[in-house]
Length: 452
Image (cartoon, rainbow, N blue to C red; front, side):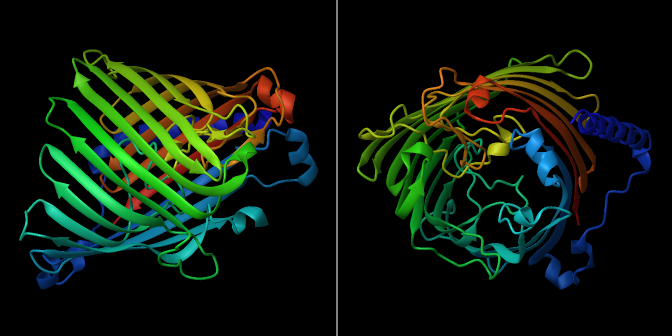
């Protein structure tokens, strides 16, 4: 493991060196090529065409917390991800617009289990395909959107496109958008798109619905106030760790207040409460986000120091008449709770210290330190995919899951070429030691994004 860790750190240093060398020749860097430039003149105003290719190398070590198991199975935990997207954006008339996003997601150099996982693979499918109709008869600010689309709200802690994923996520939805400069409200009826490796992804799966209303007010100077109501219902059993699998009718109501560049301060406050029915159980759960940062704008590299506390309830007793585990819904969890993705906003008490640096306009660096505790040790540890990563099945006396350090490097060569690299180390804690394997874990990744 030490050898792998040293290799990861060396690769990070090499990536940084490449960036620094490239920066020295930034003046000679091309701004890229655009497919749009090759369209016939009469089409350019009506049709926008773009292509995006993303490659990522991932090296994972002891993601099952067992170095012994890795040696025994000779498990391959280094693989390559390739995602290609083709976007077509057509203006049909003053009131009508169409958008299509085709996506091809592939994985190379991995185990058979990963090779056929919907987390990594979905070859040539339709990720988005919708029409926008401006209802000008009522208001120029009113739009109806019908079809397969991405839903992304707030910081994406509860609903997001999950772009980090090689496959990402989208919804078949009907959405009404009322958007003005200072106020936006969206209402939608939707069903999440389920990935089918053998066939094109089906349109509209009747087993589960996800609907909501999301409002955002920007009339406060440097502040944004959001309020939302989200409803999830499933006629098929939904799993929540020790609570088992049951039918679901769940309402999430929440509020989010966010401020940016307020005398160099930034902050986020978000609270969400869940009620409803989980089989015969009542739902009573909540989550709370507190985040604050300060940017030293007058010194080199403009450092930002940030603090964060993330809390989501767990279930003390899975056999009583209440489910208290918070449902993280459909988020972009990789952005939060550590980049190794062992944690989600379910049964968690997480603390974060962050440092951001900007040596140049194109280069940004980030370092994180995380502490993770379970809210209830009788509930499970849920990973970023909201799946059960480890369950106690009994009282273990300690909810300390572990700590994590993350290092992140981002470099924008130009508006069409971006580089991302990171290294994470997870220090396994007492909860893991008392419930099974508890070796530390490592994660390295190197990603390039090209837009045409």
